Image (spheres, rainbow, N blue to C red):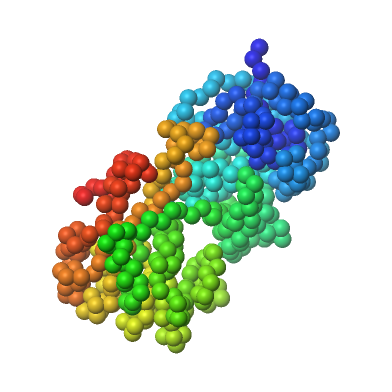
Amino acid sequence: MPDRLFNTFQIAALLRTSPCAVDQWIADGQLRSVYTIKGAAHVSESDLFEFIENQGLDIRDAPDQNPVTGQGDESCCVAPTEDPEPIVEEAVEPVEPGQPDESDELPAPSPAPEPSGPQAGQICDAILTDAIKHGAQAIHLTPQPEGLKLQLRINSDLNDKPHFGQRLPEELRREIIACMLNRADPDIVPGDINVPHSIEFFRPIEGVELKFRLSVLPTVNGPRLVISTPLGADVTLPEGPAGVRLDELLRGDGLILAASKRRFGRDHTLRALLGRSETLGRSVVAIEQRIEPYLEDVVQVQLDSLQGLTYAAVAAELEHQDADTILLTELRDPSTASAAFNAAHDGALVIAGINACSASGAMVELLEMGLEPWPLGTTLKAIVEQSMVRTVCEHCHGGCDRCAHTGWSGTTLLSGVVFIEGRLRELIRTGGSPEQLARAVAQTSESSLTDAAQAAVDAGVTTMEEVAHLLIGA
């Protein structure tokens, strides 16, 4: 009869430690794993008991402290009433890399009608760790009549975790929501949530303290949680002659835009552009939705609509702030766009984000917001187009423990720059059609987004399949 297999969470429950500690034992080679299914290590019974004997551990009186870090385990939000019993799996056949795994890296909840608090805490830890491993920008926990739906936002895609909601008993679904809320704010009572709000909290993931943001939205089925992760992306701004020209514009005045379909990643590009601008002896103001990290010698304003700090309200005051350089995370309405344009037209450098899929789309958006075509053609200096792509794991060719057997490791922001000059400037001044603007961009761009995508493929940073949508029509 083959050895029984234990997963990370069962071992953690057995030894009264955290799943992260078990992962570290496996990574250090102290605990042998039989095989890995999409990053979820399994340990045979004989190897587990050999490890316990070598470490001098006693299962009947396991320590409350993590044997690796020496710190107590705070993985659950509800104190256990008794020592948890291990959940033993039957031996299963190894799954080849690339095949779907129904467990999908999360611990399979016990069908018991009254599951313990520690189990909910372990699942919460697994959700956060899983999101970081897969490079997710956000975690969605949506209560539904039939269960709790778990989704991960990876780049532009929202990926469901198969069977997650259907496998959770009702009591455990409530405990997971309560546990996540408790970690963000111990004073929150789930039943008392009646207005949307956001909370920042810290959580150690594989030994690193990470900052998350929890957004809570009351729904008819209970609180819906969206947890933004602290994952950033490598920003690749144009280099060579185009990069030199962009740097020259960043030392002057006018309006420079960063255009992308989604805000995630665009903030990193805006920060990178601000970092390349001239700030010495200049008054710099940054108006941001989320301030992270702190910028030295920059006046930072974090928007808060509940306190009246809206884009429009703050932008309207800019003309009285004597700012030389202004960063705006998004031109989302006519009043904000008008205030940014006026500041740039009056001699300030304005670096702003705009929700548009392309440079031509950004120009159309500004014209539709009511900005005057003729002065816009003069004030708008450049548009940085960007798109986020997944980067190939440098440690493998298809899947390994470091990339959770996905083949991907992190994300990269590709970018190209469109300079507003010549035919393109004249089309803006005369209110050219979207089709005319798109053709002019294709003809004048010397460092396009499609060029950056092809270069990334040639360098092995990403794949042709990942950037195919950018290369269409190139």
